[in-house]
Figure 1 (tube, protein in one colour):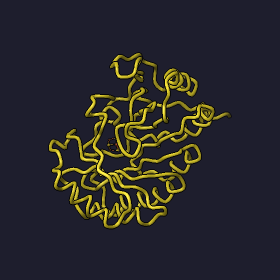
Figure 2 (figure 1 turned 135 degrees about the vertical axis):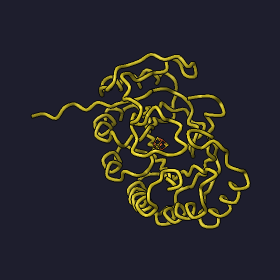
Figure 3 (figure 1 turned 30 degrees about the horizontal axis):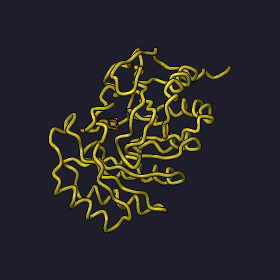
Figure 4 (figure 1 turned 45 degrees about the vertical axis):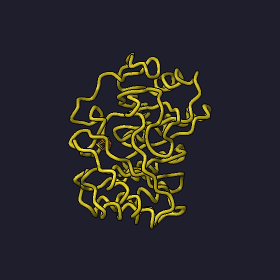
Length: 257
Ligand code: SF4
């Protein structure tokens, strides 16, 4: 029996600027998936979480920055996603962003779909929580750049050692491609958590950049992080790593998707 053709549960497809990390300011087409295996205190995409009913439709912004949408039914087929993403490509884009939720939960779909995008000359950028190394291995041949979050146990509630070991394994796999690590800094992020991120990065070569992203108050995180704390963390990490940057969420400042 032939396996069923895969389809994806998506929340939205749109074109905007990347607002985080080393590609901040780059124009991208974003495919945001439904579903996540974590529950971070600062989650700014609650519509992707499983507590929210799986959406019957995926919204597609009809014109970038307009806030106007049409919809396509979920789950989305390979052909429909190809057609939808192509509808944005009449304007120049730097790359295609797979984001979520946790896009790697739908790794089998990407395995089938990403080879179909090979002719677009559009590098694939993966935004991930860095907890599913086996899933990453499945799609790695198609990925150009991995944005891996360091998930601080103070934000996820995961046991420290389990979290560290999974993220170590993930980073080892990701280091076969370009990769950087992003740490969302909240008022609760500790120096011990920063040290863990630094230690993981120092275990791979070349040592990836570390982006310290001040939390945008959201979800259970109602307070911003103090600038002094950010500078202290930047100084601490910079003593051990070659490239540490503080980059806030640019798209939020511009009120973009
Ligand atoms: S990994 Fe991302 S999408 Fe999932 S709960 Fe955390 S912030 Fe939200």
